Length: 141
Image (cartoon, rainbow, N blue to C red; front, side):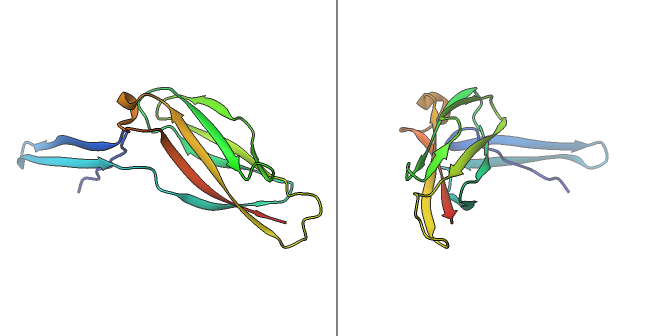
């Protein structure tokens, strides 16, 4: 058995050929086709009042890219570093904190979003517009 893993580095189709050879069994050739699609939505990630969580994120592109991160609603959620360059194929953690408005009753839930946008040319992403990831947030008092 052979395990094949596909990790797209840009949007669109990627075709390749897998060849497996053994002196006793001969050669097996298989065409592979992968599809890199827009990032799916993630979350919700729960953040308690006054707390900060580290949201795992990976630069799946084949280039070092600057990513812009923002959280909304801005009065309740904040990111630690609004811009960060992440090396190709490497991971990072995006710090997101939740600070409810003063006087918010205990047990209140505040829903929001973390949006991460790749500051990369279309030639690097395969996307006609900005490539972005959305992570749903849930603040709890």
